[in-house]
Length: 287
Ligand code: SF4
Ligand code: SF4
Image 1 (cartoon, helix red, strand yellow):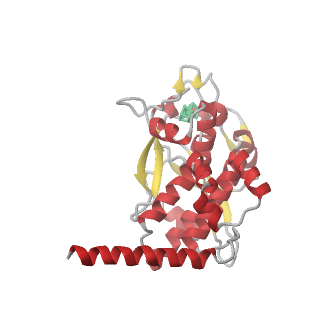
Image 2 (image 1 turned 135 degrees about the vertical axis):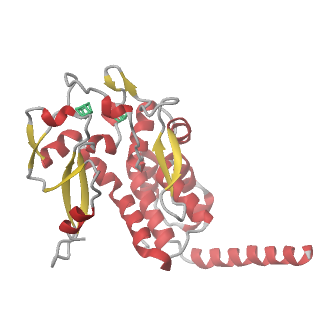
Image 3 (image 1 turned 30 degrees about the horizontal axis):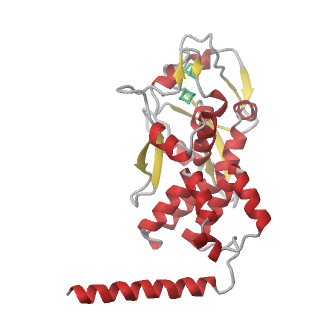
């Protein structure tokens, strides 16, 4: 989409001030304990969590994925096919983040990507006549945020660096690409099966179950990973997360990057045929 088109399509009431910025553009903003609005932004949240957010937060809180998801998230559907998404829960009967304390964020070192971005929006655009997608940025000004009045100038690149955004973007990129790919394939790809949605859920938000899954006989019977690859994946959750996105790409879109054991695919097809035949037979007997 042309950036000018984006500006034209931004609703009149949007807090977004549509001034296009690059990594080198300067903008004025600072947030610190001394601002009169300190903590205001964390009292009215609507945060969609990414897989890497969940990994960092569950590690910091010393929980496994299931416990973190049960205690700190609410499920929602990211599209009309029911792709599972998770939002951060709020304190009972409020819109306030459960991690907010008097002193500020209680999980600051591992706060989600949305909190790191907060005052910056970004989107990938393909400019007229260009093939490559370019990230553009814009400042988001909410009325309650007084940080924009603070006399501190920085470039977009410096802000991203100070907030540790690069690492979060890098860890979530393959997942974001999967979602974009699913959306852009439109009706041709159809609604994913219930099994595919479950796999997406596990591979995105539940590394503890995914770790058990790749150890299982079923997985090892099909995928050809050597002992060293397995050792690394089982001992490093960040690598495991990246591997889970490769696995999803392979299962959902047939993009093969994980080697398959010789004859395993044919064997699986035969096993499935046998299951379907058994089901058909049971149906006939019921009639
Ligand atoms: S995680 Fe921290 S920064 Fe993010 S909304 Fe909650 S308290 Fe605020
Ligand atoms: S509202 Fe703005 S200035 Fe105030 S605490 Fe939040 S980010 Fe900082």
